[in-house]
Image (cartoon, protein in one colour):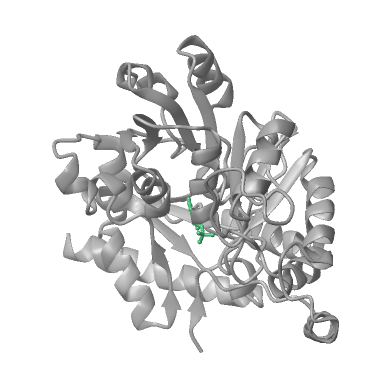
Length: 374
Ligand SMILES: *Cc1c(COP(=O)(O)O)cnc(C)c1O
């Protein structure tokens, strides 16, 4: 049987079916139903933030957040991110200005942001890649200095902290993804998170066509609502989330313990003294030290029933439409990392630790071949 990367976390099936039955009997399927309300309340408590506004997915959540912040012109973001970060900007008529990353943290390099700021810049959008927090202090200082907004694509960052504070609570607004493959899922879904009451009210209106009461449309809006069945999944997944976290941490620690003797391949660290979801098992493969390329490792694993995943291939600046719209963007660290990163199966994709032994044996095997052929 294949071992997959990005296997969804499934809650207790009977609890979910019971809630599904309740929804059908109540006939309240969507439009701010009781389960959505309960999920938002429980998530605000869990994430330690004032406002959690659920949405149908994080991509649309980002679009709503950008509109609520009244952004335009240019927004600076990393290119080493899922394409949705750039798409949300472009979709809103905003030019994504791609910044290089810090090769250690994989996050936007705050020291390279300032030179990209122009009189058209309206915001900086950090992305907490793998859930590891961006250099918030430095980004916030820049945002204040140039009077631009700061927002975060926190799609990976469910339940993580920055200086012991919930990542989701950082200025001005964050968007988390609850897609099936993320740490916490509602099949499809997401949340706009903020401590700012005014912004929270704005996004709540916008996600529901900007209806303020019956028949009173107050501005531009769209349909970004989460439905009751998605909220039911979220509530059930929240009930089992502590066990999911323990499982993910056990798997991550096992990889960390077993892999150091595989030279030329390292598993990224997660910050100590911070909460983390340990959802991604991220390796970097140095072709010279390891003896063969990341892509060769990916194929060898696949041929042996282990489906790893390359991220992000290529970086946004080399994908359409950005490659054609904004040519000549040179991001050497992003390009290098895009060639090196491989996500290995973790989380619920791994049932028993012997599966990790198998993966590591395959990695050692291919490493020795690479060395002979070199
Ligand atoms: C998954 C993801 C998104 C999009 O989330 P959806 O809920 O699938 O729309 C955006 N940004 C990043 C970094 C992601 O990984």
